[in-house]
Length: 355
Ligand code: IPM
Ligand code: MN
Image 1 (tube, rainbow, N blue to C red):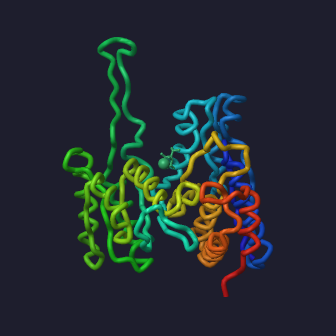
Image 2: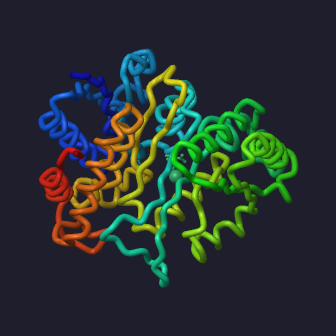
């Protein structure tokens, strides 16, 4: 039997309630699969922790997390703490220090769900977002606060290694999954230094993979194509900020943020990877028990695929789709009136191992 050590960080808002359901699913799989066992340890590092101790995690927080095979992360964000603090002291240090330079975001219309787009087409692609540098670089500053000459500078940092490794990952992902096209999201017509460099390095990698088609769109046009012909995409490769925006748009065309999963991946396995729903902490509905746990449960499934159990990933996805197709136990965001716990239980009741 293989034992996986998982660090669980439920975080803020709806994070804890959706994470609880994902944890239940992992326990259930441990029960029904004799080859598989998860050992989970929960960490209370969130905004409440910050209000008590003045920091989002202990000094040795990353050291503690390093010991785990993977991290299941809820959501972060609380009206009592500046978003820039909770983000820059918890989630971004984990992404950056653990070299989780891939943010993998499937955009897939599950069976049983309807797209808000008029014409129903199969939508099944993945956004591969650079996750460790680019527009999310902690470089810049402000001067002359409060004066008329006040100013702010924010630098986008793109490195050859950073762009190369995400482009290579996109091509490897395509190859491993039998996909035949990479779409590069850019804006090199205007952002002439960093985005031109991005294109140049991406295209160097593209030339090394001639059997996989390559196309490039400016991100504004690409946004319209997400709506007009989403079925035409297979792998969308994007910088950190572009990937962030495109992934919310992508999730909206396949059922919304209640469904959308993500993985922050360190492909080399030097550090643990982290799995979290794309949605935030949603303080407006937190504590009411109506948040959709599917995004977080699917994220846990991505975690299992990353840990080498694609079969368990598929079992979870199959169970989610069965619940969606029955249309009996759904949360309000997708047209039902069930609670978070009821949806979690419904998914668990459908779980079975793949033959
Ligand atoms: C996401 C979120 C994060 C991001 C925030 C919480 C830092 O919006 O995972 O998409 O911008 O990456
Ligand atoms: Mn986002």
